[in-house]
Image (tube, rainbow, N blue to C red; front, side, top):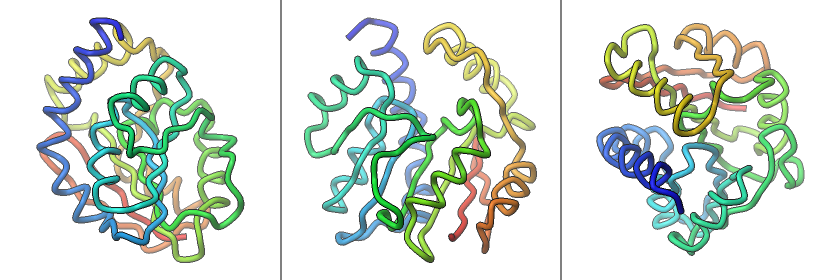
Length: 190
C-alpha cells in the first residue's frame, strides 16, 4: 500500500479512537447483528465492530483499499460495490454504519433509498460526519486529506440539521443527532 494511504489510515485511526466510544454507544452492536460498514477505508472501525458481531460487512469501492482491508483485517467481510448498488437482498441488515463518507456520495438521495432497501424494518442507520460548521482547523485538514490524498473533489458536506431533513425526507424516523468534538452522529430508524 502506498505511503499516503498508510498516512491517512494512521490519522484516521487516531481520530476514530477518540470518536469510537460515541459510535459504539449509538450503534449498539450485538453478537447476532448483521451490520454493514461503509466508509473511511482504513478498516479500523470495521475491525472494532467485527470484534463484537459475527456478521460485519464492509463496502469498499476501491479495489486497492479492498485488498488492504481484507489482508489487514481478515474478520471483516469486505466486498467491492458502490453505495448506490449494494449486492444484498431487501431487509438484509440490522444496522448500517456510514463513517465519514456520506459527503462523498455523488447522489445522496439514491444512496438513502438503497440503504432503506437493505435495512430490516426498524433497522438502524448511523451516519458519522465532520461538522464543517464548527470544525475549525480540523475542517481544513480533513478537506486537504480528502482532496489531495484520497482524491475526492466533489464532497457535499451537510450540517447536522440538513442531513436530518434529508434523511427524514426518505422516510427514516426517530432521528437523533449527537455532537462530539469535531464530528456529529445522526442515528435514525427505518
